Length: 142
Ligand SMILES: [Zn+2]
Image (cartoon, rainbow, N blue to C red):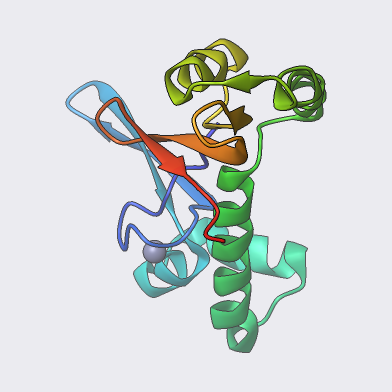
C-alpha cells in the first residue's frame, strides 16, 4: 500500500483530502499540510487544531511525515505480511539458489526484495524489483 502524495507538490504525503465535483464526476485530491495551508483549504485549520500543531511546526511535521512515508514504503505493508516474509527468509536463506530462482521466490512471496544465498558465489545476496519489470541484484563487496 502506498500512501498518496500531495497532488500539488508531488513530494510530501497527502493528509488533507477534498472531493471535487466537476461535470457530474467526483475526483479526490489530496494535499500535504503545507500545500493545504498555502491553498487556504478549510479542513486544514481544524486538522491542525486537532493534531495540536501550529504554523511554525508545519515544515517539520511535513518533513517527518514524508520520512515516515518513505520508511513505510521500504518495509512491508502489515504485520501479517512481515511474518510470512520471516518464515520464507529462514527457509530459503540457507539454501543456495541462483538469482533467477530468487526472483521467482520473491514474486511468490509478494515482496519487493528477497535475501538468498547465491549459488554462483556462495554469498548472501539480495534481489529486488526495479521499475519496468526488471530486477536488481545486490552483492556485498568484500
Ligand atoms: Zn504539497
